[in-house]
Amino acid sequence: MITIHNTGGYNMQISSRFTIAVHILICIDVFGDTETETSESLSGSIGAHPVVIRRILGQLRRAGLIRIMRGREGGAYLMRPLSEITLADVFHAVESLGGDTLFSFHENPNPACPVGRSIHDVLDNRLADIQRAMERAMEGMTLANIAEDARQEIKRTAQA
Image 1: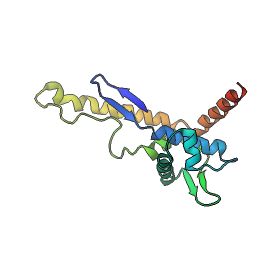
Image 2: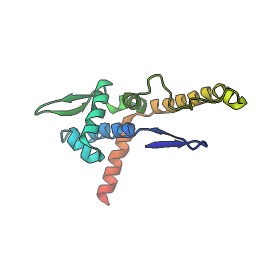
Image 3: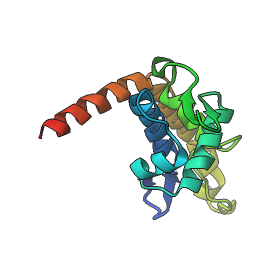
Image 4: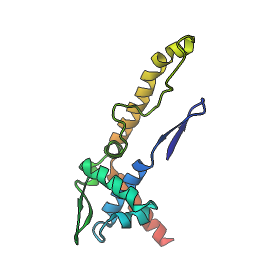
């Protein structure tokens, strides 16, 4: 999980669904030509329960990133090349922010306090800018690069 600490002692976390989803897509790409990728095989690579994997597979399917086939030819398959899938696509598929923002704001700042009265005015836009910058950075990163790095790392560790 990614944890961002603030000085107030609260933590804001992006769930592990995002990194699990990236892991799933990379496995489908790397191993898809030689083996069927099922929730059970993926859970073995990821180290998460197959039910968690199935839930994330469903989110990726609803986002149009994968298709899932049942039966003898069953498994998960990419719907488009990894060069056309960005980290932002994956993030939006599995992190259901909806109208919410990445940053949670404490609910009851004291309007009688000068800081409490103005904190939303001075902080909200900055936090929105940070979120937009993160999303823009994710839009510029495709899974093709990550898959290639994974292949290189697999080769490197196989030689060791």
